[in-house]
Image (cartoon, rainbow, N blue to C red; front, top):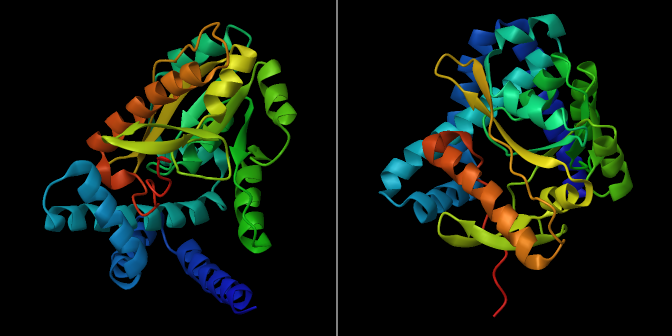
Length: 297
């Protein structure tokens, strides 16, 4: 009961913050968000320590340097929150004020032209919610696989934000048939596949030199349908606008859905993610316990 009550307190505090953010211009709300992100970094010790420890394990370097990177991670997440509030009010025609660069459309268009759909594999990187919103806004049809948020008020807020831009979601615990239908229609299916989630099927691949339990759904769906994997990233620029990059597709080929093949292509996608995280270490959510699942001996 205490946990449920706390959720309500946090929700209504968040709604108050949303109201304030909605009243001020985006550039000012981003400045405020950065300030509160830095405050959260100092106050939320558990997640600060997870982020810093993960950075030390992955990147090496001094703890002081990784503390500075982790602080910027908290700033980025706070800025994402401020932008989500603005997105709930923004005229979709003005989305170009947030996303000012879009690279690699030819990769996605080429995959879709084959008529088997496209599986966009994305990550909790930059402002990831902008990816599906932007692609849908410029005419790409598709659906996202989303996590069910078990506190209904949180879930309703995020769902309504997506629906404002005609972005529909399929809960990841739904029947795979719903996901397959999207691809059979030749549309885009978006999946965030960068976290250690023990409730979904996964395999261990190398991520920053450590065995990392990684979801295998993207590769298995590709093998089942013939669709290609298309890595995609949203990168926050120094001026707080965003660049979307669509990477070259990964073709799993006509392979059997066996453990070795699934592991091979899960590793290939993870290699792309690692390259981006190395290039922009302050834009990935290091406060997640990425290496919590250990290889059984």
